[in-house]
Each structure stands twice: as structure tokens, then as C-alpha cells.
Image 1 (cartoon, rainbow over the protein chains, first blue to last red):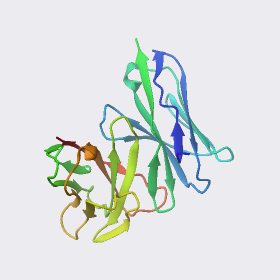
Image 2 (cartoon, one colour):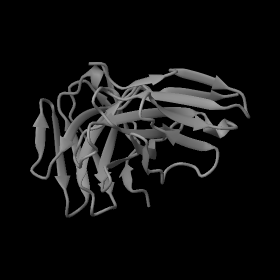
Image 3 (cartoon, rainbow over the protein chains, first blue to last red):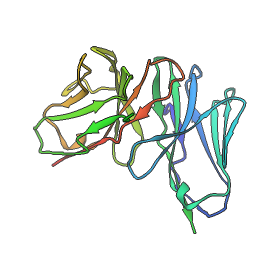
Image 4 (cartoon, rainbow over the protein chains, first blue to last red):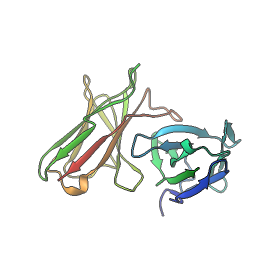
Amino acid sequence: RKEVEQDPGPFNVPEGATVAFNCTYSNSASQSFFWYRQDCRKEPKLLMSVYSSGNEDGRFTAQLNRASQYISLLIRDSKLSDSATYLCVVMNAGNMLTFGGGTRLMVKP
Amino acid sequence: NAGVMQNPRHLVRRRGQEARLRCSPMKGHSHVYWYRQLPEEGLKFMVYLQKENIIDESGMPKERFSAEFPKEGPSILRIQQVVRGDSAAYFCASSPTGGAREKLFFGSGTQLSVL
């Protein structure tokens, strides 16, 4: 079983749609959680951290469920520029980031 | 304040040659991480270094791969006798102190192509 699992997609959605990505992790001792965005084989860029209380940044909402070891990302009112691969990332002891394989999002006009 | 700088951006090598990938962390950052991304796959951790020390190399192949982060100069990821399977994007990231919950900043990566 992979340490961080994501549905690879692609998710094809029209502009304006709401889309949700899920991610599960296997290490219950994981300490920190993030969503990164990666465009066309460029470097990953931090989108947002994920907290148990849930956090929102504009059109993006992230949620963590420690009991279920589950992380989600919700994107509202999708824009064409949201098209990218979204990486679920878990930080374990030793400050190492473990990346999921990514979920590809394609927003169509 | 320049970000994490990696060079070269693209590197082409023939099988059996050596590849040297360089990473200069952000100013003030003393912790460096190397990740590899094979085509159509996610990023995989390779090695974590502090100045002059390897902290964790559990993701590094046992043969042909080595990494260093000297007191002066960039971190170097060295691949000896490259094979086609080494073709990948190699990303470097840095952080100030390596503390828990600290965000990592990534460089633009080096795309290695082995002919």
C-alpha cells in the first residue's frame, strides 16, 4: 500500500464547477499535511497547509480527518487557470515530505 | 531574495557518463532535500542534507548515486554511469532549520535525459 494515495484522475470539469479531491495516508504518526500544485512538470508550489479544523483560502478549502487518515481539497468556481496536478503531501518525523502521485484537473471552457 | 536555484535546467547524458546536478538553497536555508520525479509519477524523496552532513539518505539508490552539501557552495547530486532509467526530473528543496511543520521551497528542477 502506498503511503499517500490519490485518485490520479483526470478530473474534467467545466468552468465554474465545484470539484473535490481526496487523499488517504497510511502513517498515523504523520505530523503535517499540505496540498501542493504542480504545472506541466514544473516545480511543486505550496497551495495550502491542511489543519484538523479545516482551512479556507479564497475558492479553496482543505480538510483533515485524522481518525480516518483522510485529507480533502475543495475548489469552488473552477477557473481555467486551476488546471494542474494537485499533490497531497504528508510530513512525517524527520521533516520528510511524502508526496501522493497527484490528481490531474482539467478545467474546460 | 532569490529562490532555490538549480542548474542546469536540462542535462543530456549518454549511458555510462556522469551527471552532476547543483542546487543552491534560498539565502539563510541550511537544509536541502532532493526529490526525483519519474515520468507520469509523483515525487519520491531521495536524500536530506544539512551543511556537511547527510541526515537521511533512505531514498537514495545504493549504487551510483551520491549527494553532498559542503560548507561552501551548492549541494551536488551526483549520478555515476547513468542509465536510461535515470531519466527524470530532479527537484531540490530547502528550508531554514528543518523543524517540524516547516514549509519547503522548491527549485525549478533539473530534467535529466539519458540517451
